Length: 200
Image (cartoon, rainbow, N blue to C red; front, side, top):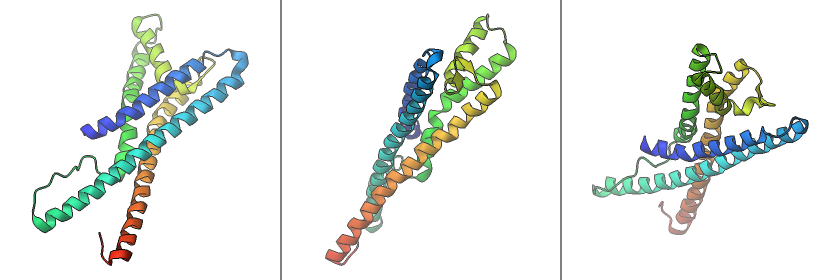
C-alpha cells in the first residue's frame, strides 16, 4: 500500500499544478473567451500527456522489476536459496489504475465536504459558507465559465468523472510502458535462443 500511495503522489501534484494554471486562466477578461477556452484545452492536454509519460515510465520500471524477480524465483526454485524479491514494485496491470484513483482521493474528500457544506450551510456570508465557495473553485475548476459554475448537477457529475478519467490515463499508460519492455525482453530471449540454442 505504501508503494501505491508513493506512486500516486506525482499524479496528484501534477493535478494540483494543472488546476493552478486552470484557475489562473479563469482570470482572463470575458471578451477574450476564445483565449480562455484555448488555454484550458492546452492545459488539459498537458495534464494528460505529462501523466501518461510519467506512468509509462513507471510501467517500464515495474516490468523490469518483474523480470528480475522472475529470474530470482527460478534461482530459488533450483537452489532453495533465500533471495530478496521485490514484490511491492513488480508489475501488476491493476496498479496503474490504482495510482490514478488514489491521486484523486483528496479531491473526492473535498467534494464530499463541499456537498455537506452546501446542504447545511447555504449562507455564503458565514465562515463555512465561504469555505464552500473556496472548495467549489478547487473541485469544480474545470467546469467554471466566466467565474460561474455551469450548473451544480453538471459540476458534481463532472467532478466525480475525473476519477475514472485519471485512472484510465494512468492505467493505460502504465500497461503500455510494461508492454514495451515485455516486447524487448522477448526479442532478447529469441536472439539468445538463436545463438545459444537455449532459453535464458
